[in-house]
Image (cartoon, rainbow, N blue to C red; front, side):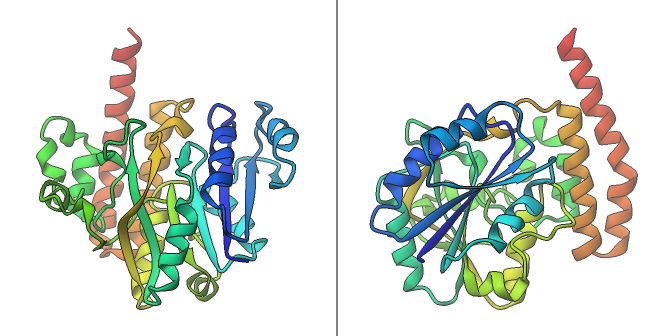
Length: 288
C-alpha cells in the first residue's frame, strides 16, 4: 500500500466529512487507506463517517488519549509505505497526495515533509508555516504573551526570513513542520517505533518528532509542490484558552526536559504559572 492517512477526531463533525471527501480526490491514483482514530467523540461525527464513508477504518478510543497517542494507535494498524498525519480541519487538493507521494519516492533522505498550507482563498497561512526548533528566548516570549506586544520577537522562530524573502515557492530544509500535515516515511516510523513521543498529550509532539528524525540523519522538508487548506484552530475551538495554555505549557516543559539543559527547563517551570495567570486574566476581561 502506498499511503496511510491518519486523522485524530475529537468531536470534529464540522470539518471531518469535508476532509475525508477531499482525501478521496487527493489520493486518486494511489493505493491508500484512511484511518480515523477517535478520542471519545460524542457529537455524532463517527456515526456520520460510518454512514457516508463506510470504507474508512475507524478506531474507537474510550476517552481523549491526546494527539500523539491516538495517532500512534492508528499508525500501528497502518500498512502504507508512507504515513500522512492529517488534521480533521484540513482540505487537500485533487491529485495532491499522489503528487507529493511520488515526490517522496525520489527523496530517499527525506524522513518528513509538509506542503504549502493556505487559507481558503489560497493565500499562504503564515500561522501554519514551519518552525525552527524552540529556544528558551522564543518560548518565554510565547509563554508571557510578549509577541502580542512585539510580534517581531518571533520572526526568526517563525521562519519569517524565508517567507519575507519569497522563498516560500522553493523547497527548503527546515527544523520542523506542523503535525496538521506531516508526511512520514515508513522507515523512519519503524526506527522510532512511534510517530509521536507518547509523553506529549498535545503540542510539541510534532517538533519533537522532527528533531528525532534529524537525530537519525533524515531531512525535514517544506515543499510547495502541493497546497492544502488549513483551517487553523478549528479543532480546538471548543476548548477554553486556559485549558489550552495548561496543555501547551505542560508539553513545553516536557520538550525542554528532553532536549534542553536542565536550567532552561527550570526557568520554564517557574514562569509557567505566570503565563497561565495572564491567560486566565485575559479570559476574565474578555467575558466581562
